[in-house]
Length: 208
View 1 (cartoon, rainbow, N blue to C red):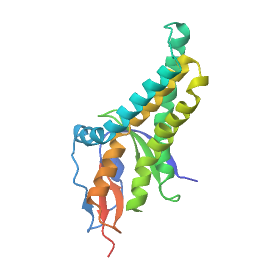
View 2: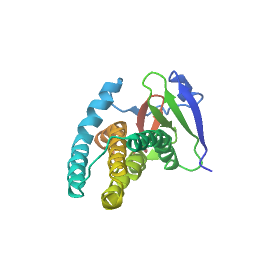
View 3: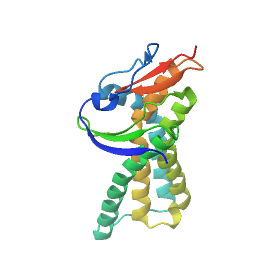
View 4: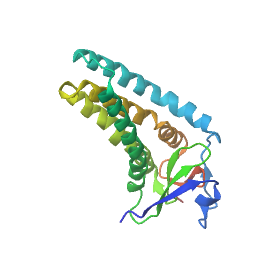
């Protein structure tokens, strides 16, 4: 239904482009070519959110008098959380894919160079839809799970409460690339223009 394919290792840009063509009037986003450029912008945007989550989280744990015992049970909960996070890496990318047009082909890759996972679809979408596509995973996995954690923390085992908090926090922290996409889209894409991916970069296409 959603035409999502797990492709495996991404070694070069040509694997993304395949036979697709870029419109002549497409304008490439002014964005850095290195992962450090992405982390710099996305990190600055995400920092206030992450600090806020951390401060509120610590206060919440203190209010329920959360105390952790370093034992086998705690170690098992930590390992289970790490495994769960690995699964949710794929779910993060699947959510990106679901918000693209239903009939478009979407692919999930693992970049060999950076080790990061990415969802790729070259369908043209509106500016607002591209922003929604970018933010959907961090909202649904990171922020929504954090809200649920805040509500249910008092009735959870202390060890589970702590690991759930860390899971939500890391889910938001791992979305810095999505924050960067939104930043460039809001800053550069004119009203009414269409947005699409082509290779490692994003482009906007004016509607004439």
